[in-house]
Length: 465
Image 1 (cartoon, one colour):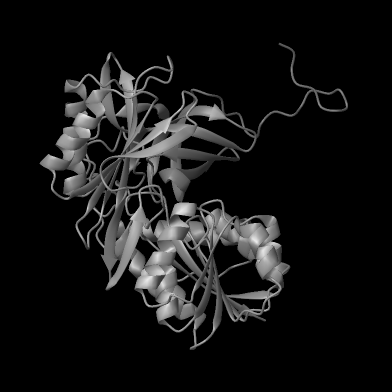
Image 2 (cartoon, rainbow, N blue to C red):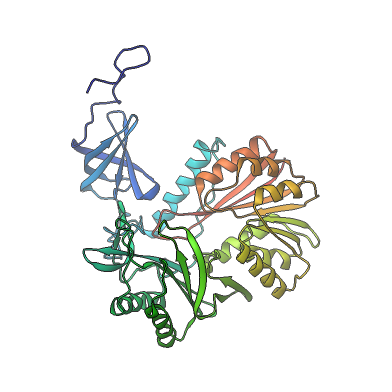
């Protein structure tokens, strides 16, 4: 194969340095990137090494070389970090669910805070923002409200578990997952065995055959209710209904078993109830929430209460303040806002969540709150002509659209709270709001709602300049 040519016909310059795949060397690790990858420099290239920690010296082998960076495999820790620890989970080296179990809890938070600082500087071009220390709330293990397990047909047998690290199409049987509650763990183990006895076959994506695709268990801590969802292919095997009935008998906390049927290409077709009901109830700080099977709710409800308090406090609401809330979900933040005196208008794109939010707000004593169903950007365009005192938004990981960010910049509100689960999209959107929208970034507070993983929640408070 002839060498690559530049536009002028001369050979294109090689990547910086002389690194080639297979080369091994000693590397000083100076930082931690997303997905728990250690970061160092060698021969002018940034080198990413999964499993290595800041402050360590490691022997690594190059796996792949790009123009300005390289990927390497960790061979040996020559000088360990004082923050390194033995991962509590015996599946950590194989399972892709957790990234940071080998790092102490305190250092996990600091590493995530540095990632927020870097995102605001590099992506948001906001300079050196004074990001607050990470707030740690709730337990480090066993905190998840919802667990999603995938089924695969592997080596001639059904496997229920989580995706393998570095090989997303392969499933690792993780029993137990330390982030799940004990009832969730027991249900997953029972269903895996019961499905095998009933002859229900796991999905094989390579052959596009099989029946069972995914198991979701939602476990409420306040009410102790449990809701189970089975995602399947088409078909109505009698064994499925029998399994659901047996599950509800064996686990009294299970209030419902829901089926979500998918076409061969993964497209969602329909939902049905196999046993009980298709929603559960959760109670937090005296607020009761109806949560449909398909609606989003906080993965770590106990710790999310700290986020909620900070988000509402940042708005400094007075009685009668006109509050516009975007991406309101089932009303987790909304209920606290109306209790603080806000006159609320909420927007949510998911139909089931919208209906649940109306009911949850009614229970909170705010029947006059306006809850709108629809896509946020076009509804925001309609609502931007009204007068608002404050804005509250909690978008998905993708953040807001450029048009929504522009519209938010043009609102006449005095205060805004932006709750985010992704530092990159938060930084991008804040950059637009500050530079083009005339907002001043007052504070960014990170919350470690997802210990052992790379994920971090942030509450950003903004005010008019």
